[in-house]
Amino acid sequence: MVLKSFIEVEAKSHFPIQNLPFGVFKPEPSSEARPGVAIGDFVLDLLVVSKAGLFDGPILGNSDCFFQPNLNKFLELGRPAWKEARSSLQNLLSATEPKLRDNVNLRDKALVPMCKVQMALPVAIGDYTDFFCSMHHAKNCGLIFRGPATPINPNWFSLPIAYHGRASSIVVSGTDITRPKGQCHPTENSLPYFGPSRKLDFELEMAAVVGPGNELGKPISVDKAADHIFGLILMNDWSARDIQAWEYVPLGPFLGKSFGTTISPWIVTLDALEPFTCGAPMQDPPPLPYLAENEPKNYDISLEVLVKPSGEEESHTVTRSNFKHLYWTITQQLSHHTINGCNLRPGDILGTGTISGPEPDSLGCLLELTWNGTKSLCLGGATRKFLEDGDEVTLTGYCKVRVL
Image (cartoon, rainbow, N blue to C red; front, side, top):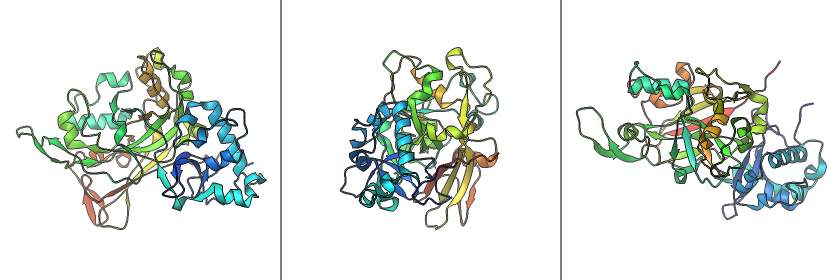
């Protein structure tokens, strides 16, 4: 029997009762931020639900985790608490449960129209790591910058490559991004110049949100890593390609990346994504034992990027990709991150890197789509090689129910 909510949810909605992503919001601009879940066109206020005593399970019954301005305390409780919360909320919102459905006063307090709320960062982010886990993206970048001789460095097939990013410049969806300035180097024979980036790009990514962390010096096994991942978010890791190209040797990205990273306000839990698991790509050579998973899996998440050129009314789809194209899984990423004893903490963000597919229309950034500006994209009445001031970028992701 299909679970159904007493709240009417349109078929095209990203927020049915089977999803229930977690976020943080303000019901009014002057309100304190508090946790919520999305259901249809509403946000369910978890502070109101908690105060009403509707979380009565053994873990959450006496917890104040939903009295906080972020989700960190809830994430720290671990998977048993997450499962208890999800089960309680699905029961509370189901069409057959009267506790909220038939309590008009409580319902009016707890369900806030999504169009009226102000979304905030869902977690207090202590650290942010960005991986480089799409083989198609790695190959294309190598072809662009190094040529066909060695498009992918040999170490890429042995470990999930990553760098430590800037957490302070991670912002919630809808926040304007200022075009960064920095040093650039247009040609081999010219001197570097300083100025605004001429090659501003988006990056279609997702990110894992860390739940319980680990003690310093105690790695997380790859087969237990999923218990340390609360869920996934959409992420646009903006990139100034010209600044990055000049600065990244030998230590990697700096000013070309740290000016801004945008994340979705909603975290979709791994439990909600479980029906959409799929096999992970065959890894050749086989990973070292600490990265070898008993059951490697990815998620079948359709991803799309739309760009609305400045001054135009219509957005245009520029790429369609899928999370399943990742070569290194999120559990391998997390386990590798801790194998040297590095301690992760609740609310840490682990970006996947740009998620590109094998087809020309599945490339996850303008660097690939325009082959570093050597060709243009047609966007209605406008053309683009890279982003211009006033352009608007929209990332979407969704899972489809498999019909057998």
